[in-house]
Length: 296
Image (cartoon, rainbow, N blue to C red; front, side, top):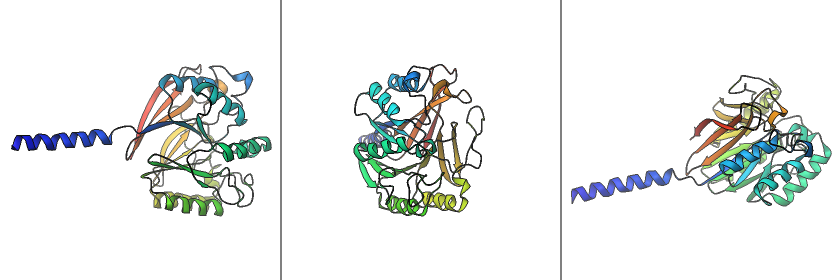
């Protein structure tokens, strides 16, 4: 009888452990493919090469792109051509997008019509390009850092009062165990994880230190698992004052040979996630798994 009881306890513990490790879903992050999704660059050496590599390993439920996706309609079309019409894509406003009126007109319209699993629209005057959505056990908050309280293209990169108040309410109301915040600019620019290239030093959210610090504290207070960003065209993974920051680098292939072209694949579990970093070291469409990280 004791043996049966011990076996049952072991079986329950094993089953529980296995369940906790079951992947619930996955998604991809690509950033800063700017210009290199246009018709003349639609081959494996540029953004299309990253999409082809994602398709080869098996795409997730959706893709997030944290900024500099200009022109966005070329990016959207390539994603649909590769993964099928209607594949979920969540764009984030980058500085080059915000400075291009045609891009912003398209992106406002896209976000108004195509954002699925929407939880909350953004603050007044930024209702389309700041938004949050839930997918299974994860809450995603996407912020337009180029909003200045009045215009969704008024800032060079900041967390203005309206955005801060919106995000504070949004995170407080979220009941999901995993929370992620996504913006364009890093809190602090970090060197590329593999080759050390460093761009945009001091030209990020840290250009507005008071706003940046309260933003960081807000993420800590709400147990945000990670902040995802782009902007620097370098992949980096680090801790900024207690906040995990993941810069997705660039997915423009040989359009930038200063750092390897990159995409990230996130695997979501019950109470944590892992992400794989794929990079094209040869600058020729040969993406290989370089790193895997776990976030708890």
